[in-house]
Length: 114
Image 1 (cartoon, rainbow, N blue to C red):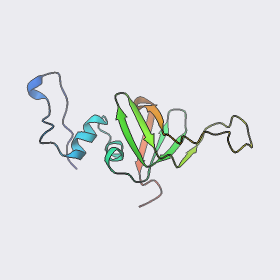
Image 2 (cartoon, one colour):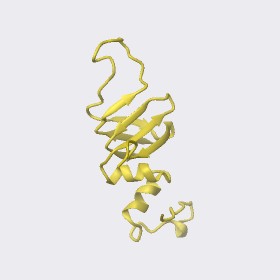
Image 3 (tube, rainbow, N blue to C red):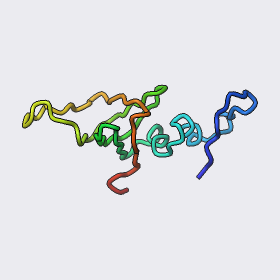
Image 4 (cartoon, rainbow, N blue to C red):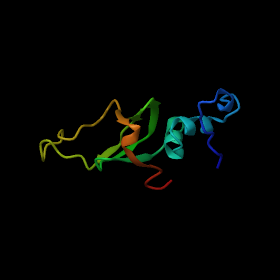
């Protein structure tokens, strides 16, 4: 596995984005998380757990500063039902969902096997 360049405030120590691979750039922008980085360029099966305990299954992600947008939400587990027994009581997130990166506890690639 490739090492992730460390970003410092010294301009001479800044990573050279021209020579970095797509995976290295994505991993650096994802704060070092290999699975989150992969989710930005490889649409597949991913899952993450939030600090609230919700587990979100999704296909790909985009990074927006301190936020992560999860796209193609397949399933959400652990959200409380607003109206128990009603099909629409848990949101479907048809347009994705934004989550603060710091609120992601873990992220998995191919959580149900490849």
